[in-house]
Length: 453
Image (cartoon, rainbow, N blue to C red; front, side, top):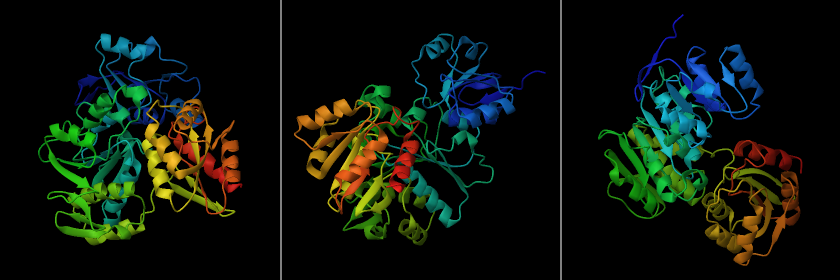
């Protein structure tokens, strides 16, 4: 039987074989969406999640494990890469040389999604903002899906009965986009991160700017005008630009003045009415409020949601208080800027014992180390990055350094170093891949260890 062809707008018609690179959540979701007659799945690792393996076999989807071979690109019309797959691996270079198009799962999903999409990117705050927008819309009564980098693949969304899709979009997902076009795009901030992938801050900023590249004049871009890199990035946007600012009043945007949040001249609420705390969360709220207002959510409903919303798991998440010591899980703090935010959120209410380290992203540690010296009592170092972190902290004169051989030891040693009234903060400023499969696993293990203290 002849395999039915599909049409991907950014590629063209008559796509009969798609090679999916990566057997993580997004890769498996693509395989589920398109099925055995279209997909060949290729995974570099020898072992994958048992549930995923069982699903592939049940659906009779052809696959290979333990490396990407020539089989993946033979007679292939399109390659869909998962976010974790680097675009410069040899097999993809070969594919480019024989003109096989390469896109990501988010770009593929765009071919199937018809309802308005709100897409959120930025170095920090993406998950909180995405979740908050979802709550704002849902509490008002809209039917929505929250998807993307947040854990539920965009390709899995069936939008036939939805009003809106809210999507967290990472730089890894944006770099393979072609015609991806949200109705509302949001850029929260651009700070140093993922340089092992994007090489320079200039390239990283260019990738972030792809979120609005295809937007038209009737689309909207909400952006942080307090961030110079963001302001430079959005200059080329052709859609309607709506700035937000925590630091100054704006004629045409969302801003904070005298501890109140305004849109244009209309007061939305007091920042004291917002449940999630911290300056970074006020910025997240400004962006989310802008999106909700564009979707015609009433101010009364917005205020109620802001008063109820507790934040997201693994982001400065209070875990437990024992022996007078409070434990906070900020496993999502995977770069120095996010760790600085976590420190500033807890200090001066608490003296801090900070757990730092993991898979090094080779970002500049200078400013974070200064914040540590100023506001942190003790640091417990873990993982592959601990040597470089130790060197930087010693160089700026921080002396209360400790090292742990494993994660369990790090948590328990931090507790011993803490005194009543202190906080133990897991905010590693690093990726988790030297010890865990992702930051979620790291955060859950942290909480499990704390539960047993």
